[in-house]
Length: 161
Length: 275
Image (cartoon, rainbow over all chains, first blue to last red; front, side, top):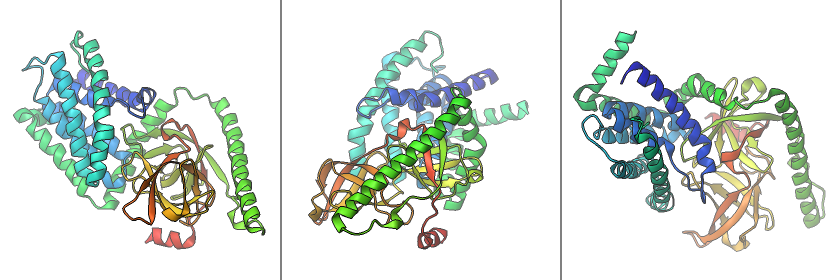
C-alpha cells in the first residue's frame, strides 16, 4: 500500500465511522441496522491483504472499544483483528474474488466477528444465544444486502474500499 | 521518518501478515487483561487526544453558534419546567395518597449544565456518549444525565473539557427504579447492551404500559426522573419476581443535547465509589 493509499484509507475510515454513527441509524428497520465497519474491514482486507486487514481491523475495533464498557476493552480489537487477518488471506493480488464470493465472505466475517466478540466479552450463554438470533442474524442479512450494493458500485473502479 | 514507517510496514507484512496478526492480537489480549486503572488510562488518553477532537470536528459541521446558544437557553428552561411538572405530578400523587405534606427532599434544586453530544459509540452496541462539558463547566463523575424525555445515564468520566456518559444500556449500570402507579421498587439493567430489563416483585401487579421512574434509593439519581415504560412482562427465574422489558423514554442514538444535573452522589455512595 502506498503512502497515498494509507492516507486515502484513513480518510475512508473516518467517513465510514461517521456514516456508521449517522446513516446507519436512519437505515434501521425494527432496530436492525447494517454494519458499515465490517464492510470496510472486509473490503480493505480483500483489497490489500492480511497485514493491512489486521491493522485496520484492530484500529476499527479499538475505536469501538473506547466507547464500549470498560470491562469489554479489547474485545472488539481482537475480534476485528481476527476478521481482518482471515479475510486478508483472499487478497485480490493472488485471487480473483467475484461479487457473490465477496458477499459470502462478508457474511462469514460478520458472524465470526460477532461470535468472537460475544465469547471474549464473557456474556452469559442464554444472552448470547438470544443476541445471535435476534440481532446478529438479521443484522448480518441486512449488512449483506448493503455490502452487495457497495461491492457492486465500487468493483468497476478497482477500489473496493 | 518515512523510512522508519516503511520499515515497520515491511516488517509487519512479512510472512503474509502473520507478524502483524500476532502483534495486534497480543496488543488486544494485553488490553483485555490489563488492570482497570490501565484500561481507564488507555480509554481516557485515546478519547482526549484522538477521538474527541475528531468527533468534535465532524459534529461541528452543522453547528450554528448563535442559534445554538439561544437553543440551549430555551431547552434548559424547558427541561427545568418539565422536571418541575414531573415533580409536581409526583407530589400531587403523594399528597393524594398520604394526605400529608409534600416531601421536600424530593425537590430537584440542583443546577443544570446543558451539554451537546459530540460523539457516541460507532458500533452496534451504544453504551457511551461523549459530551462537550467537563470539570471546567462543573461536571463531575457520577452526576445524573437526562434529556427532555427522560433519564439518559450518568457521567462515567469527567475530563476538563468533555465527559463520557454511561448510558442506561451499559450492562454495568444498574439502578433502582419505582413504578409510578403501584409505588413498588425494583431494579433496572441491560444484560446485553441492547435491551433494558427490570426486575420487580410479582405481587405488585405491574403491567404493560406502566411507567418507571428513578426511586432515589441508589444514591446517584434523584427520585422521580422518568426512565421508561414497561413493554412486556415475563416470568423471572424466581417466582416472586417479574422480569420486564422496558422501553426507555429517550432514544439514545438520536440524542443531540443532554442535561447534567450537578448533584453529587449521597455521601455513603460516594465513600463506596471512592473505595
